[in-house]
Image (cartoon, rainbow, N blue to C red):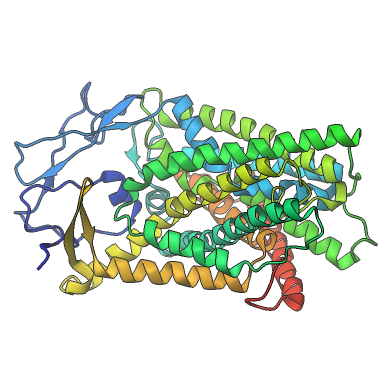
Length: 528
């Protein structure tokens, strides 16, 4: 029989265990009361040159030792972990923001035109910059310099708002993560089809229409994610995150370069001041698509849900919110410039015919090998990004289940399987079954709704107002005790209400897009 141990609740067969602080706080669930014999944290009781005010080893801007939980107070181990300054925080934000959303920006500008398109992008950037700065001031409760730290977004909501709003925030956050899994499955399958189709078109000289179904590619991506989803802990996917970031910049740069080349070939900028015109589409379609474009732009900028986690890596003094304000400003400026270049050059290259996905809509056909490289980069990026977004959801469900049914062997037991040259793998049957079902459900839904732009717009609309605007503003009002009906309170509420209607319009446009697509789409049939 394979050796086994209980890890949820904590292991009892090993005298020493290590519990990762970042993962523990990110799960946002209360741990069960610990027995006196269980492991306890070694915490420095007073502030010193080596420890921060929360008793944790000081965030230094280079390396930080993570507290190790041991059964014996005299035993202490440290593990070095990167922590940040302005530049490391800036790099985290840029990496988090720039993703597959950049591919739909040319299409979004195509719906809005040369005037409204770039203007809306800049406005979104300014709003997100402002609300991110408000959110950064909620990292500490009570005092922005030495108040109690909130290690995660949910911790900040709990400390400042509490009650039902914590549950609502968690529901929105995890539904959004599930939606991201669906969106990434669709995007990955589209890129895989684009590789196959571009090679087919090249070999046939354009004579073969190269029709194909996305189902097989979605299933392949789903199987891949089932394998990677068995990585037990969130902190063990760091290498996937690094690879995903490199791939993200790779395909974004390829898209920008191809756009510049196409404009040079055309000898002029395409597009109109008002975007796609009524006549090419109906007035109703123009309205819905313009609304959907708002969601696509919002999706491209979303990162607020991880802002507090990034801020928790920053050394102090100076106060973390001051450093975060600089990092946010730099990263939003860099991202906005990059987005404007990619979106505007894509629109300039194709005008109102800009494809929904710049690298898979076959506006570009040559050099086909460069397009293949870019689409491979997209697929690799999405494999890693899928895990980065879904691992916290996986862990949340597993920890909640262990708390709900602590004596169920199916949920709590782990079997240690030796793997040559690697070590041992901790197999948990509940993790195996539940994560497999999750990926399978997300894959099936993706096969039923393989509409990249509509899903991206819906995700952007769903997450923008509550996570990027509403909760940061409400937490800031509570933290700073801003009086109701005061000028500042009215201004903040006006911003929140305006963004709510923008999100609502984007959601309506995306839902309308899905409905229109479903009229001509047959589930599980050829999509290209």
